[in-house]
Length: 80
Image (cartoon, rainbow, N blue to C red; front, side):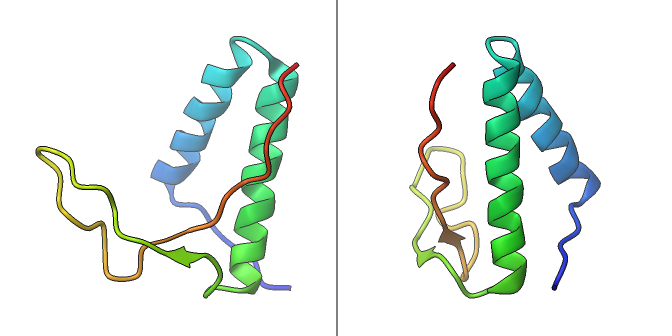
């Protein structure tokens, strides 16, 4: 099984996301964190998965985040 490794910046971002959601619900934060890790594991197994897309244009931001920008949705999270 292929593995993934998060950069220090990405790990910090995930901690911030977890902490923000945990202010309202630790259980919800744990579900979101697990969902993100599940998607990362899937991506490690199938690097080409996802849907090609271009980043939305916003003032002060590059028009495109890269030539191979892809997205893959997490499953809907239940609140509570």
